[in-house]
Structure formats: structure tokens, C-alpha cells
Image 1 (cartoon, rainbow, N blue to C red):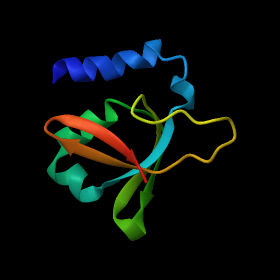
Image 2 (cartoon, rainbow, N blue to C red):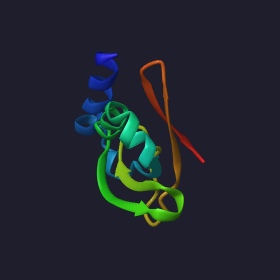
Image 3 (cartoon, rainbow, N blue to C red):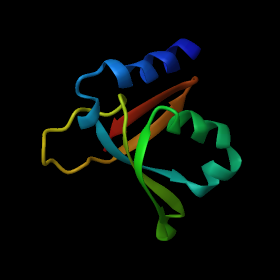
Amino acid sequence: MENYFEYIAGRFDTDPDIMSRRGRFHLSQAMLKHTPGDVARVLGLMAVFRCEMMMGYDSFEYCAISPLFEPLKHGMEIPEYSIELSEGLIRARKL
């Protein structure tokens, strides 16, 4: 799995579209409390530029740049993603 994280992190330096790879996603407070290592792995693949506590949803909403997100055209609204952790891999599924 270490190579997977190195590969994703390395794309920050090599992907010419990295600044257009923006996404919005939620992580629950329960996840932060019970599995902080998973939260650290997810956020380690992101450059977060906004985080807001969403009291009504008991979660944090993040806006970030990441190689996991699809590139956006200029002026497009930042899409929402579901972050999925499975078998040590982290995926972002567009909602």
C-alpha cells in the first residue's frame, strides 16, 4: 500500500491539471473520533482549502484539491464526492 500513497502524492508534482482537480466531501465526527488513522490517510492525499463543521449532519465538509478528483473546467461548481476506504485503498466516487 505504501507505493499506492506515494503514487497518489507524487501526482501533486507531476499532474499539470492538479489545480483543477477539486472536490467536496464529508467525513463524520464519528470517523474522526473512532478511526483517526483513516482520516489522516484520506487527508494525506488532499490539499484542503476549506473545512466547515456541518452541525446538522454531524460531519465536517471539506473542499480540497486531490489527484483522486476529476479535473474541472474553469467556472464549474465543485462537485461532491463520496470517499471510500476499501482494502487499504482510498477512492473518490462522484455523487
